[in-house]
Length: 67
Image (cartoon, rainbow, N blue to C red; front, side):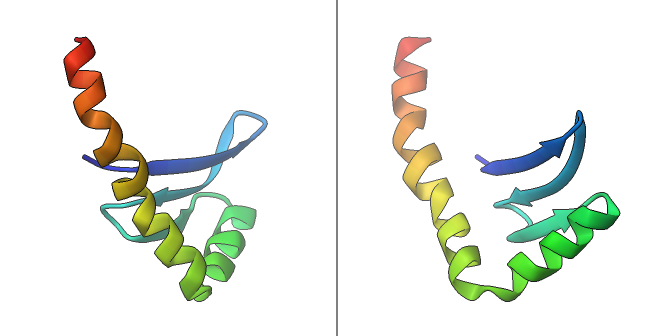
């Protein structure tokens, strides 16, 4: 299971956080700047890393039961 949060503007992906990578990755000039700033914030990274357990792992059983 992987938690992914992406940020888009005008249908272009700017930045993405992936729980498997464990940090933000930028895809545009602005996205790279945002990712660098967000990756420096240890509290923001720890919150995002915890989202996999908070959201994904708590809901996976519900989704499998409904299938």
